Image (tube, rainbow, N blue to C red; front, top):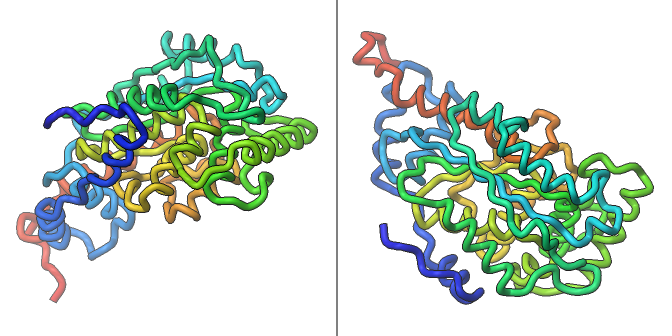
Length: 339
C-alpha cells in the first residue's frame, strides 16, 4: 500500500478524514455466507460473532487472521501535573517507561499472555506540554508531530492494533478534551484518575474548567492541540493511520478513548474500525462511550491505562476469530440443520 500523505498541517489531517475507506463488502459477504452454516444456533455466540464479522470488515479479507497483533503505548508528560491533579509526581512517567522496557509492568504480562507485540514510545518526556490553564498545551507543530508518530504504528501486515498510554496528569487532559468537545460541567468528565483524594479532585475539576475556558474552539483538532497532550495526539494518529491501512483497532480506557473522540467529533464514521476493550471505572469514560455509541467488550473495574484493558480483550478477539474459522459446518459435522 502506498505511503499515507504526510500530516504537515491540520488540513492534511482533515484530508485523511475525508478519504477514509469503509468496510470491505466482499469480506462481509463471505462472513455472512459462512456464519449460518456453523454448528450453532444463529446468534448463539453473541458478541463473538460480531467481533469476527468486524475483523473481516476492517481487515478486508475472509477468513480473519490475528497472526500479528501489535500494541503501542505512548507516554507523555503534562504541564498541568504541577497543579496537583494527580496522586503521583510527573517523574513517575519516566520511571514507568523504564518499567515497561524491562518487562515489569502489567501490560508486559498481558502482552506475553495473549501473543501481542509491545513497543512503548516516549514523547519528549523531559519537556512537558504547557499548562493549558494559561493557553494551548501544544503548538500545531507539536500536535502534528504526535499525530505523525502514531501513524507510523499502522504498518502493512499488522492484523490488529492495540493502543494505550502512560502519562501523569493525562486523565485531566482527557477530561478537558471531552469537556471541550461535548460540553456539560467539568465535573461530568473528571474522575479520580490515579486515586486523588477529595481535595485534589476538587482542584482537578477546577483545572479542567479553567483549561476549557482558556482554550475554547469548535474545531476538534484545535481542542486536541489546546487541551490534549503528545500521547493523545499519537493515539489519534494511530487510529487514523490504521483506518487507511485497513487495520482494526482495539482502544483502551478513558484517555485513549478521549483521543479517539477527537476523530469522532471531526467525522462520526472515524471510529467504525475501532472496538473498545474495556469500560474504565473513570465515570467520564462511561459517559464518553455513551456519547460515541460504543459498548466495551469487558467491564473489569480497571483504571490502569497502559493499554492493559485492551490487551486483556485481545483474548476475546482471538476467541472470536478461532470460533468462526475453526468450527465445522453442519454439513461437515453431519449435524442436522434447522428445518
